[in-house]
Length: 391
Ligand code: APR
Ligand code: PHB
Image (cartoon, rainbow, N blue to C red; front, top):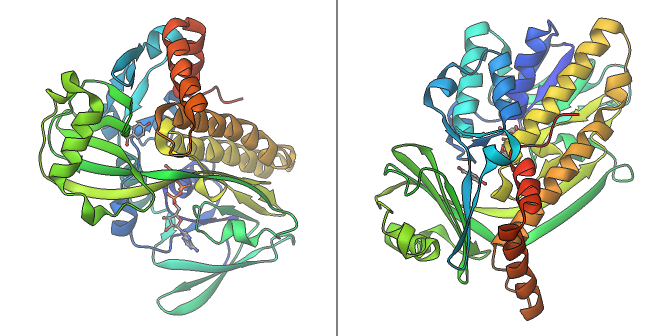
């Protein structure tokens, strides 16, 4: 394959969904993924889908298994030092959230591409993107030990935080904004029933914990750990004991423990790169922004980006105009920054920050108390949690 209309770098959720949307619009694209399928599927990520994400997966014909296996939630619990607020999401917003692992979304998208013959190349490592400000950019990649060149009209940088696309934007053009948090999330998967039918976000004096799930028989659980924590220092027993402590005695009594089938530590960061377009290079998903997993916005933001990018490319090829492409970056960033703000705010509310002084801890506690007593505050949280409208 030497030329196409749209070269997609990255075969995570953003790249895979964009390829599906473009194919349904009749736009020729080639997806290049540096790893193999098994590696991409081995990455365990969050599992909460906004309604917009579910609707789009249905629109592109990738929702059959999701509809069968997902869990739909009307609310979640937030606890603060043993005090509990149930956030009645559906009552407050009229919307629900869907629990379905990102790995499963990725698998479903891979399957539809395999079934429809989309040009997805694995073990294809993009090493450079040339001439992104010219009329025909060139994507240089290595596959089977040989260098190849893919010429295209547009390049979609869906290659995540560590990819090559964002680095192609000149330093004097790119503006980045970052906050690295002084802790990470130690997460496990275990084939034991969840301790609650909804999610529980817990701020305990010893740190944050999140009780979530992948199904009625598979638990996903997290505890906040220091940045220098090592997985090998956390036995399953140590994890479960700390998890139960932070959830409190009532919930702890419902925790079924069992062997972890996956255990990993994820660092937390907020990051935004501007602009999300440079010449004929357009960034989408983690290539342009990272959010702490607290608000479960990572996948949903990637979906919102590629939904807008596919619409802009479809408009360009069908009408010859570039209005939507010209407005792509500003339109995406308007929504990205609101999700970055919400994820930062919820992370600040629900975690123990080592550097917080007594005043800041009092403010954190007051923020929770205000949430408990104000329907307006709960509505604000809920409308961000379910996902702000696509504008
Ligand atoms: N060439 C080809 N592929 C690359 C390159 C490269 N130079 N660099 C990175 N990639 C691939 C990675 O191997 C990865 O599979 O790009 C893909 C990017 O996928 P993600 O990192 O999953 O990013 P995205 O598709 O934007 O999805 C965002 O994934 O990481 C989670 O929390 C994140 O939920 C969010 C979602
Ligand atoms: C998850 O299920 O992995 C998950 C759910 C909600 C979050 C974060 C992670 O806010």
